[in-house]
Amino acid sequence: MRILISNGTVVTAEGSYEADVLVDGERIAQLGAGLSGSGVTTDETIDARGKWVIPGAIDVHTHMELPFGGTFAKDTFETGTRAAAFGGTTTIVDFAVQSKGKSLREGLDAWHAKAEGNAVADYGFHMIMSDVNDATLAEMDGLVAEGVPDFKLFTAYPGVFYSDDGAIFRAMQQTGKNGGLIMMHAENGPAIDIVAADLVADGKTDPLYHGIARYPIFEGEATNRVIRLAEAAQVPVYIVHLSAKDALNAVRDARDRGSQAFAETCPQYLFLSIDDMGNGFEGAKFVCSPPLRSADHQDELWTGLVKDDLQVVSTDHCPFDFKGQKDLGKGDFRKVPNGLPGVEDRVDLLHDGGVVGGRMTRERWVEVISTAPAKLFGMYPQKGAIAIGSDADLVVYDPGRKRTISAKTHHMNVDYSCYEGRSVQGGSDVVLSRGSVIVRGGKFTGRKGHGKFLKRGPAAFARKS
Ligand SMILES: [Zn+2]
Image (cartoon, rainbow, N blue to C red; front, side, top):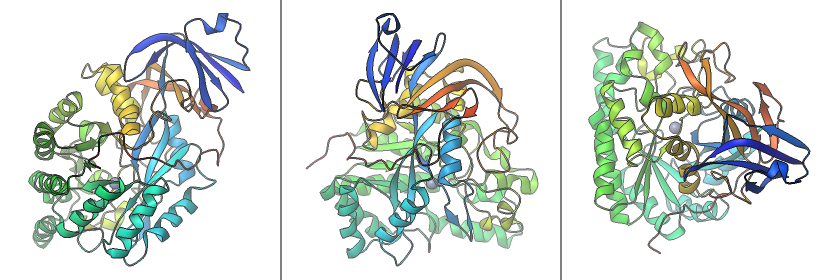
């Protein structure tokens, strides 16, 4: 199958230009002006006049079917990757979970079983480590070799995912040897739990107090601490879902002194605030960790994105229904399943708030939603690029289209939207995954099982050894 995308403006992280893009099979075969008139034979031509052609977006932080507090995130790999595709995202990297006392292998196998034959677009895995011990440290090397080179640890959630400083440092030392990358959820969990227990004892049990208990300074402290540990271990580190200026300051200071500290933020921290968590139990719709912050953090995060102190925007997509799941936390905010839906809306929200809003160029937009995650997570230039030989993961993007976000029309398997009623400019018209059109004009044209496991290499930044 040969598809020509003609007359569009190719927008990449490096620059924008008018060009036709020829797809042959699963790859990009040719790029150039006027290919359509040059006798190239094709099975189909997609007219992209007035539109942009961008590399398929990459979301490196999703949680399909994540178990949390006795329930599971609602999206499966099928529904989640399909919703992602509607929103222009053609690759996800999800978190496989090692359960306490079990091996990394068992956790990874369980996530392969959830995804295989179900995803409609490509997917990779990071590994959540719940135990750091001689056995799991040894297993890390094998996972790096089989294309799962990143390991997430937590300074939050004592008794569940929490690792102490020694465990984090040992895991970091191991990545110094095997080329892996440590990703950190950086909030001071033990201190948060004390504040949360005090609030509940005071009768302050509404979801709003989830946001109040998790002070920004607890995120700033933990972020600085894990970066310092990475500096001591002489390895890079990646901070997930950075939400607070206190944490951004820690990352910026580290980068200013030459450290390989990297960080992502998420749309919820750019567009929503703790004000959304009021209104009684309705606030449960917005319970995630770190929590939504006061609105004055938002401008600083945008500045962080522009100045490259934040390199990536991912979603932390982890959807729980308001009715039947979030309501497990009625009467105690600590029992509300943590997580928000977002995999479908990231690209358009960032286009609307970033490019239309005048905060970033369209090239920087492509970089934070696609190219930077591809480079940091060992997928570039197979993904995240429009180049000869790259996978034909492509989006014909209409920068002028307007729509209103609503749970009534979204494709995520969850009963509410955090952005209900918000109008955004920009939308994906045609979405290709490895040369197959999987979304066209608002209709799904792909197939369950088309998505393949993506074996990823080490990240594309300098290493000490
Ligand atoms: Zn997460």
